[in-house]
Image (cartoon, rainbow, N blue to C red):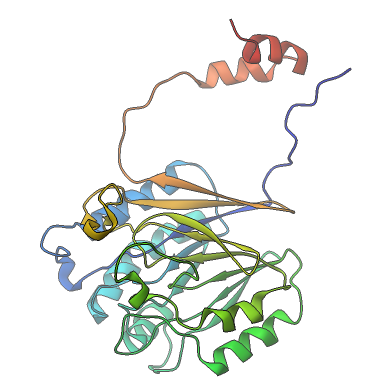
Length: 298
């Protein structure tokens, strides 16, 4: 009986999911010590170093910390060239720390407006719908009647390869005290719109740590922040931010599933078990020979 290695075809496309960059005007350090700009620069350099050509860079909100015009300009100056080199669509979503007017003007090059920033992108047949869950003047999240009606109308027609929904506030529980105050409100209304549609994944940020959940039968993937993260090694009532653990996510999109992989930001010592020469040697073997050379325990 012949051996088939690899039960899945290559991913149809790859998306990069980043969140919570929290840039400040003038390149100021966040909370006096977090280097938001260099953290993001390292993340983008790592994305380029993978050799992957992602379909999109998806930023799920809190792009700036105070909604300052210069902070958006500094973010754009760093990200747009990387997206161009990668040939990737650049997708900006609103967060609770963002301000619609400056974001529209500096990142989207639109006229200033306080209406929600809800948009649709077609990524080679994969639809991405971005929802603005921000509430002007507050940090919790909401989606109003008009947004939900608009979303329902968009989802009436399935996309060729399905839909991904992105928003800042995740429709998921968070166990830390006070986090429920900052959550997305009235989530049952969103659930009623999404259930039974072609939505394959929900992308979010806001929590400052990587987390996965389910909502309306749909996987939810929260990307940790690139600025700072929450130290979940502490008891829930002592959970606070730490300058470590920053990461971004890679989404590999297949015809019937999507994988979400967390990539830590930074330089780390790695082993050299799988060299180019070793991989080429394995690839030259038959499946049966490869099993004997690599799978069989010694």
